[in-house]
Amino acid sequence: MTGVTGPLNSDHREAADVEILTERHLLLFGTIIQCFARHERLMAEIMAGLSGADVVSVELMTRDLNFEEKGRALLNILRYRKVPVDQYDRVCAYLKLPEGLSALRDNIIHSTWRAGDIPRSIQPDWVLKAPPTIQPWLGGVDAEFIKAEEEKIGYTVDEFAEMARSLSLNIEAFASYAREIRPTAEP
Image (cartoon, rainbow, N blue to C red; front, side):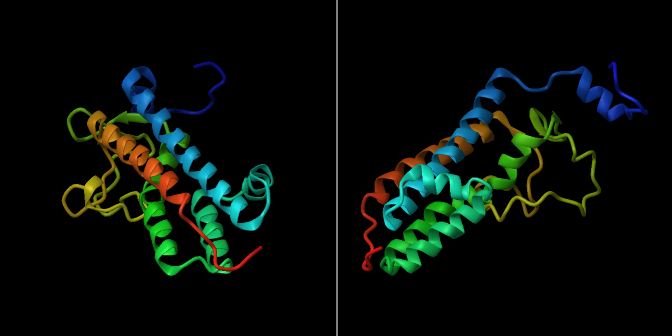
């Protein structure tokens, strides 16, 4: 490892020496990231439609916002445009799954991965055998993706596949529903 100064502990050397991610992991990572991009694009399209702006302008204005902030911006415009409460609630429900998985998305983007403590699982490398009292925050993801009473830090390929499938189904349903959103106040 040229250019590296300072010692590396053995955990980092092991992670660097053995490539733990398979092609399937990488495909699922890409699918999950693309699902988030599709959610963000749909939010921009809804905001554009409700505000009378074009989608590119909305995307430029919101590009420095994280996923949760874009969701809040969408909900704010829904309130401002006096979208019926049932439609507002449905949009909130469609945002719940991706918001709950946004910490996982951040780990996919910003972390290297190592073998997890659970057989056939991987986990972010920054979780280096943390004491049991230290657990990463996953944004309140429900029991579907959490085993026992603790938050998960290791994931199997099957679990990544289920998360990708759930996100894909969510964006398809959200996009279909978005056509029904109708404000009661004009821009």
